[in-house]
Length: 179
Image (cartoon, rainbow, N blue to C red; front, side):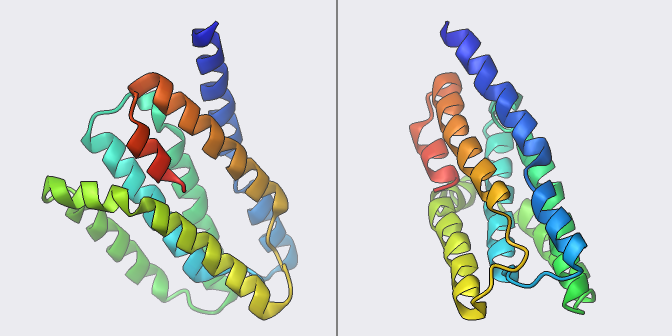
């Protein structure tokens, strides 16, 4: 029974994550605007996802516990490019690419760096959400923010906590993952 529940949680998480950002991307493309979306929030979210993915790879966790992160990161990168495009700042895309690529390698220069970064993921995730809420408050317009994307994110957070604890017994890594 537990194995079947674990499989169901893994498969449903992968399925949701395969399309998690599509409602957000569709809203931005349909509007031709990224109004209401916070660039800072998205960058913080990407930082958290990159740190978490790197942590999982560094400690050789089972692939099924983090398989969706490359997919989510790719969708976030597309969303980042759309935000930069609609705000007229596409020249910054190269700077973001170089920064994230360099960060990917710097995270594992020393073990304490990846461990510290992982311990900060809860704060990074919370800061990401607060930055988005601040943007919504300032603009007084939800713009292209997708409630469906946020709902799917809440579901995958819950299932990933369950699946990682069941698979790896790592209470710290998963609890810190998405705040």
